[in-house]
Length: 183
Length: 416
Image 1 (spheres, chains in turn yellow, blue):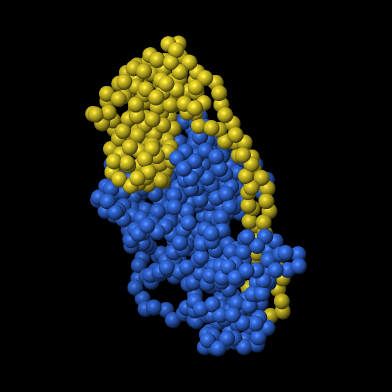
Image 2 (tube, rainbow over the protein chains, first blue to last red; image 1 turned 60 degrees about the horizontal axis):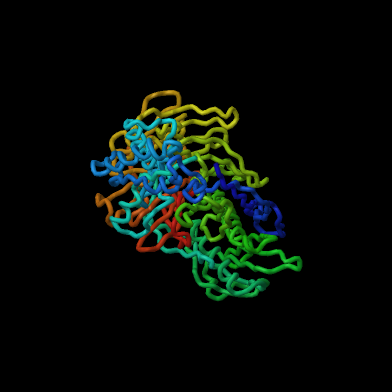
């Protein structure tokens, strides 16, 4: 198992409103409190774990000699219709292929399902939509005999588009579930 | 590059006692105000930016007819400039750099050419100068005896997408003119202030094995893990006392809303529908507004904590996928065109849970991320219209809408 942990120190601005101003004698001083911001800087260590991708999985080799990365590449993404999370008829073959790989060549690995959405909406609902897509694929995999305990899920919303053009074809490529293998 | 604060447009609608009720009234006769710049320090670029920031703030106060002309004069002059002689009020200020390099601003409020108030502001770091302009506007508003505008000094958290798989969190002023990156590396999204003091915030970290809800104390600079869940985890809302959170989690792959007690660290599941329930927002009367697709499309519902009953709050719109609540009010985003991928219009609407009236707050473009200010006085949102992104401020009491050009194109979420 290889896990890259990158510690990044970033400056944090703490903008505090403090009474560091002074009043001068005035004719009509309605405003009572003078407030100006001051800056206090400190650093925060934000632990950033590198995403589990084929790049950090190249050390793993399956029993048949294929690397985890190669097996992962052989798994095909599952695509969805706009605002839907049911598996389309034309995608069922993809899921069957993926489940076969999960049960054979990838049987030693965990399977992480990453749900993704197009750019229409970045709110929580969209993330939930991505998750329901991952869950739909998980249900199919389990129905075809993959152990549910091997499967984990995450919704990435629109954070990881594979296409950034503003076209129908491009948006369709982003409404998908990707397969990642975990050692 | 700085964003210069500019007023793009405003519309005049008006409210009655219920903010969701739209009433048409005559245009108010607001007092005229002019701004005189007596600055002697720093370069022209900073002085111009400071002037425009202050001008924008005075506009957003919605109390004055603001003269946009940049007048300059000597701070000690007894008379206002000729063009301001007929003004009801004049703000004269002087920006200067002190010997210790601190940023100093002195301000006079003049009424009919008579000085009625003076203020002095100092700042160690001149990069934060926009907050001085905001503080000046706050004090002018207070001098005028108007309702408090504490939100003008509040900070805004935004998450923005930098590249596929990379998003960062920034802290900004309310116009997003000032910004400073706080969190970077991997996917960091859904920032949410943890308390009224804005001394800490929650956010979701997605680049690990499981989604993690983290808490960052910006006074100590420490980040800690709060919760994790398979699938997704988002802190949707924080109770006014900071003791309870509404969190969307999916421990079994099913997105539902949970109530998390900060002290006991225990979670209580509030929704059990097998579809999508997300985006919980604290309402008054122990109720929670949330987004659900239980009717086949995303819409706004409400539940009472401790009860299984669910009430539909909105009966209009084809897709109402996000909302923000303050007491009995809910502002929500609605898709208003049926073209799945055309130039869709997403508008913001305001409802009161005590009435059936729906008030449309925006008219064109894609309007999203609505967030009430802490006192419910205003709504912050992001607008996309004709290739231009803007941050919008809706002043509910004054029925005006102000837009400021935005330099962050791909905003993922926002909190005020």
